[in-house]
Length: 195
Image 1 (cartoon, one colour):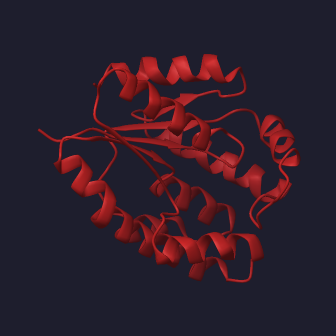
Image 2 (tube, rainbow, N blue to C red; image 1 turned 30 degrees about the vertical axis):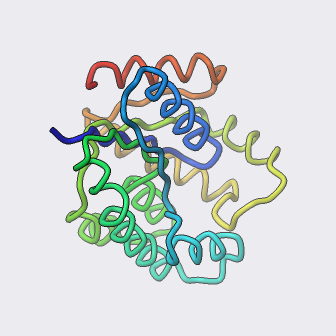
């Protein structure tokens, strides 16, 4: 029996990193085998991507090709082996992130989707989607910023996530503008149905 593949995705400032950690800790406390991971990954491509996101030097298409290359490494090296070992994987961002940010940068959505078709699909895909005003407020509180965290790009990213959620009813949308405790409970209640 394989583990479950759970993805938390959403715009910058939506809480995906925090809630990936909280959900993983909760599952571990319930004696479930769990691995928390994130994209970009911790391999060579992922480390290069994190550096590029701070500098903003790469053109959008090159950036998204690298995200896809990083995903190929991440899936084969981390995600698939863990799932095969009956471990539940909770991933902070995945394919939806590449599509949302690519769409926000005016890349062709069909091209982005075709590059990512071969990858394993999540068993549970949750979008954390607070209002744009909440996202922008949270981003202003950060000590450092990345090239994709501008108001204009974040508004487009939010619209892209909203579009994807409307087109795919299997995606669970949670407004993460409330307390972290309330959001964590909503996420756990969703995941409980599948585990």
